[in-house]
Length: 314
Image (tube, rainbow, N blue to C red; front, side, top):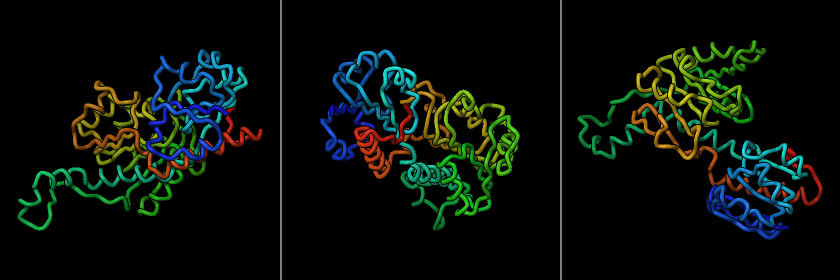
């Protein structure tokens, strides 16, 4: 079986032994749009993280039988075209939950404790100049006793909620915007108004694009922070930058942007204030997480070879 991995760089240096044992593996560090046909030619299985596999490409790949998405989201695959061409599609879910939860709380604790600012001051020698044993230049707050709101209560949202409760936070789960709350959920607008910490874990779709924009940011407490480790575009980036600039909210931790890699013109990418922590889409990328991902891809391919249904979307 000929297997082609189109963007091996996204898997860091994770060993690919489990894939090499299945068939003949060809790896490309990255694949740009112009090279897709050349890189995919002759492949029976394509593994892609972010490379787009559309109808036009599928029509040219007569050997292709299976597309393995090295991620959970499949917006880079034309699923209808795959069905038309009788090409199976699989994805991997749940592999990055521990890593995303860890990163979510790294952002929260850094913002609440102003840890990033204290580290910077230490690097600049300001502790050495302190008249007392510590420095208390910036406020330090605890998660305990705070109201932490979850927007998007799938496996990630549930895992974040569990850790938040261990910290002593009161956890509230948001209902979808515009819907009457279910028994275990709270009205979306009420969640925005009452939360001390908002953590976003919903998918990006037409319903959630710009879910949180100027109106919602204006409803938040001035002392509140917001975290997005889900998808860029759920929070309006220009509106968030404006709210941070005017200190309308206390802070934000953002791991994802609407266009990645970040563009120089993006208002969050060029923001310089201390009340924003911006990381380059790394919440998912622990070495353990990527190892689980590779293993799951191998299991998906083996299942396909044995005519078994596993993580199949098409």
